[in-house]
Image (cartoon, rainbow, N blue to C red; front, side, top):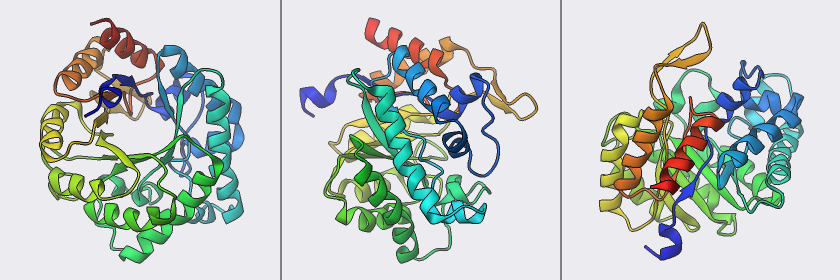
Length: 295
């Protein structure tokens, strides 16, 4: 690992969590893409909140955007492509003159099914169907000019293999892949984290691998296994933990002390890019930034 790769980098938190904390409604099948369509200024404000809190990397609001998903809610493929481009433009605007890295989110196929399959994998699609789904999004995002791609919440090695095909014509744009895991040794579809990392490490442009949108208790063991399987730097931005209360729309039982304690543990196990996912808003990222850079 080079000295540059070993430098601690703070990734932002859960965009939907931050948007909700600012009074935005992200319910419905388009999730944060709904806010992108209706209030791009709110997306930009959320990005800026993370930057102001100390994030070195922001992830765009394109996670839920796809032609297929937009068609299913009565929009067009052209609407989806415009939203993909807009997500990068908004991220670029928020990051202007700050040196912040803008990573374009590429979520899993399961994110558009609205039935939890992003945490299961095993979609029942062919490799060609999956690669075509991802290719059309990646092509638009790359043309929009992000600094890198954030290929995230991938639950299944078979989806990694399809992504490899989709990325073949992406010009080697820098990217990371993070997996959603069901325990401290397996991605959600059941394959080992070592198999997932091996599949990801063969893709040109992949600069780091890791974990996101996963219970924090599993992350130290996952980091250890990832580091034993690859020399690529490790990125982690798991969920905050606690319990989701659907009535209040908030995560319960999580304190900033919990978030900071977890982040320190991930750093000590060897992760070099660290942030948060669901349940971690800008204040949580601020606590991580202050704690990790101060000690």
